[in-house]
Image 1 (tube, rainbow, N blue to C red):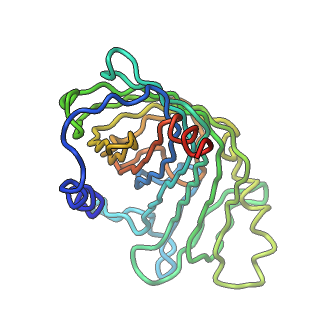
Image 2: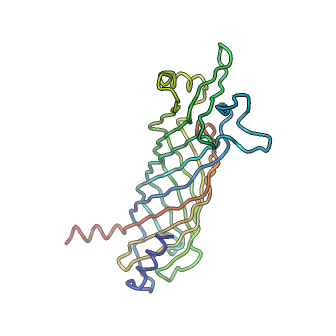
Image 3: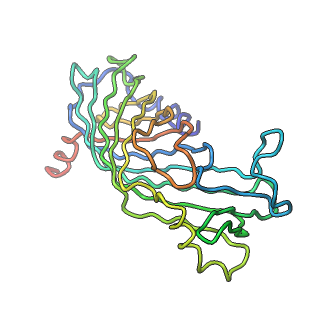
Length: 260
C-alpha cells in the first residue's frame, strides 16, 4: 500500500500524455510472498508435556505450525511489441526461501523419528530451513488499460527455472549437547530439497511511465505454482500471494548519458 501511495504522490509532477518510449529497457525488481502449507510427512512432532499426544488433537488443531517467506531480486531486460501493448521480459533472479516450524504453545516439542534402533525422540524448540536459488524468469504482460496514457494497468504471466546455490536445514535442540547429531538426523530423514525448481506465476500490475521513459511498476502476485517436487524439506509448496516492485530504464537513456 505504501508503494501505491508513493506512485500517487509522484503523479502531479509527471505528464499524463502518452509518450513514444523506446521498446527496449533494462530493469531491476524486488518481490516477496508468504508461505504456508502442511508440515512434510517425514517430520512428526509431539508435545513435550504429553509425549503420547500426536501433533493434532481431537479437534484437529495443530500443536506445531509452519510458515515461511520468499524474497527475490533480479535484473531483467524488457522488450515492448504490438504497439506497446505487450511486454516480454527475461533476466537473472536470486531467490531466498526461509521456512520455520515452531510450537503453537511456548513449551518445547518432541521430534518423533523412526530409526534402525527403534523409535527416537529428540527434544527441540523447532526447525528452520534457508535456501538460495539462481533462476531465469520468462515473463509476458499485456495491457488491460492505458495504452495512450502514462498510467497503465496490466496482467502478467511468467515461468521461472532455477538451480540451488546454497541451502541449510537445522534443528533447534533444547540441549546444546544434542546439536552434534543435527546433520545426522536430517540426513536420516532423507529427501533433501531438490537442486532444481520450476514454477509458474501471475499477477496484476499498475505502471507509471515518466517523461524520460522510466517505468515504475507495482504488482500484486498470485500464488505461484511449483511444477517440480521436493522443493522444500519442511513444508509443502503451498504459498500465499505477495507483491513486487520494479523500475526499468530505456536503453537510450544510458546512451544519452554517455554522449553528455
